[in-house]
Image (cartoon, rainbow, N blue to C red; front, side, top):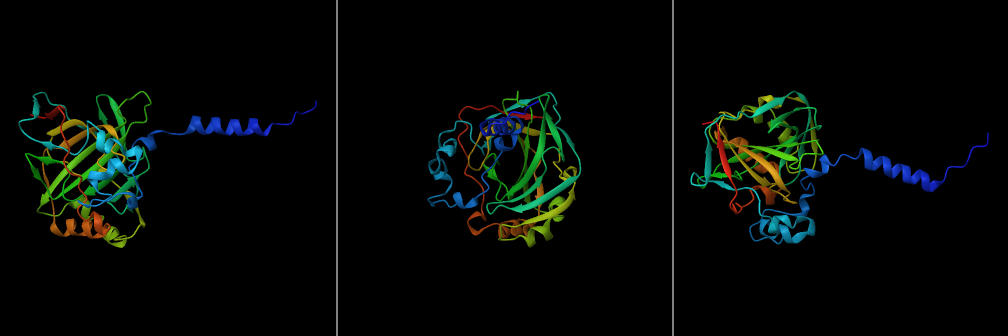
Length: 276
């Protein structure tokens, strides 16, 4: 039997088909900008927060979005939900990478390896955690000394809101035990663009505190300011030492020592408080 020659066009078409089929859009959906040279936090800077939405057309939501984060959780705006709805975390130990992204320090796990949270019946896989100082969100007008963001992504293509972030606020006091485990590695990548292999890190050791939390719909707090993010902010304010906050500020690049985005307009959004 005579074999027919395979057309190069057919081969190219097949490769493109496979790439489209096996490409996971989830990793793109929750992608924050990694190249910190593209934006900064300077109040009067040409690349500062008030200009983010003008720097790239893909970042237009930073300027024109109606559901932007962070916000202030003022008592007058909050709707108290009397029934309890405990946040279900199903985390597990997994290999992690500590990365200095210039604008923050990020602890990253392979998607799905470190477990998930469940919100309204949907599983969101833990992707990474990073720190802002001072805090980005505020409660009754008060901004705290630090905020941790735990970013999760849903792999379910049917889910409309693909990203869920847990926020934990900190004030100066006793050292944070989880952050203490990372201090040596953070020091080793200070003011660089390097990474540090952390080995196995257990996200269950990140303490949220009480069972009360705020919930609202918002966005990523760095470009591209993607909206449709489900925010869960723990009401309990935990503690962090001055030395820990100082190290995080010294580790990032100079412009990001204060890496908190200004508060954004509420625009009539609901803010719910669970766990009364």
